[in-house]
Length: 378
Image (cartoon, rainbow, N blue to C red; front, side):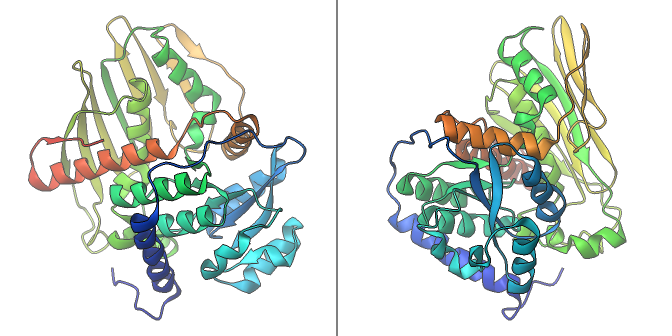
């Protein structure tokens, strides 16, 4: 895919974001102020950075239904679009910001949290800008396109004394939370053998809408960064947030080389954990698939299709099906993250977890390119 030219809005945001990242790497200290509980006298105000499909169709509507937070601002490249959002969601036009005026959020009492929902390359710059404005940050997955950017984001939030979390919604979904409990408490036994896949078919009509996902520079990679992160998450959840020690991987197959000229169409990989546990995984833009299975010596737990989509997941174990309430994933996530801040509790999805997953992804790409086993530096 053709890289956007300097005159394009995306390239301008990329340039600004990279300047902020560079500054943070030089200036941010290693440790920041401790977090304290927030006053529980109001809903927390959330500003969305980027008004694409996920903000428009999932996060915005979810913020109408949340109990502990509400939409109070937006950051967008189109002032006209931002004003429409302000009128639609009932917040003042003064809370419409551009990507290069995010510092003006500082001192704005309407905004407590900034949720970054821009293309992956831009996450670091926008998260760091939000932190410098004194706002807590939620960054949509994947956290960034490199471990170096993750480090800059974590450092900037520590320096500002604000919280950095990653938009891993499934930690707040009841069935996945129950799976985490099964793993943590070893109800079935320690999980030793895992397998999972996640993906969708990116057809020609979808390509026009999601072209940035096929731009290696903006996306950081293909389906591994987009859909594979969910499988990485599930495998690490099965091992109680333990990172793998090494990976092997391979690209392919490629059925549409003209479409997938910069990023992989599919990728398979194996994660090796300390103690001998293994996870065989796949991510793809070639078919709709979403499942995960974890086996212990005397039992198993599995998510049937769809394991990672927005629909209610189906969790079954060797002891029988797990029936839990159906929730809106984004509502549960946003309210869960708001309550963590209000109560001063640790996040279920901290920035360090996002960094771990990018370190794993980097190792997977290195293994696929070299056809060798690569140790994970998480």
